[in-house]
Length: 141
Image (cartoon, rainbow, N blue to C red; front, side, top):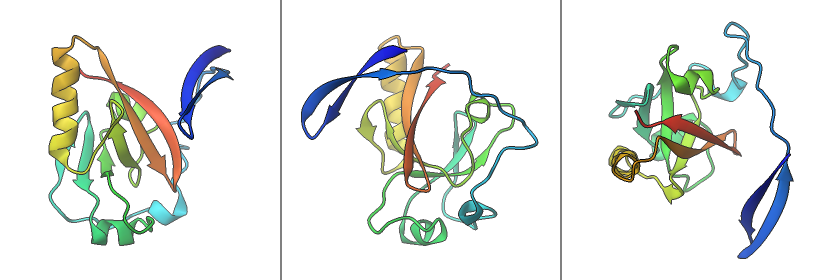
């Protein structure tokens, strides 16, 4: 267990988080039913082994996201990428990078450039899957 400092309702709290190893089976990765074979056709860009599109009304409808959802939808994950190893899947939505909201691909590219310029080796992404948040750290190299 390790201490983690979080902000909730504007107040700082320290929580004890139990770390563990995620065991994955390449053949048995569960894909949420609502996100299988999701047709997404807007401009696509590949970053960090992920093919991404900005969330717009059509993407939001295709992924059954809540009204006004923003971020970058994952349409494809390179099987040999670190993102794949860490469980990022098509249908996930990247909401933040480096604790800053994302609305377009250039936002993510800017966060990556900032992280590299600051000498950081990784960037923390807030990823939502079927509305549930999770954090994924990916190397900026």
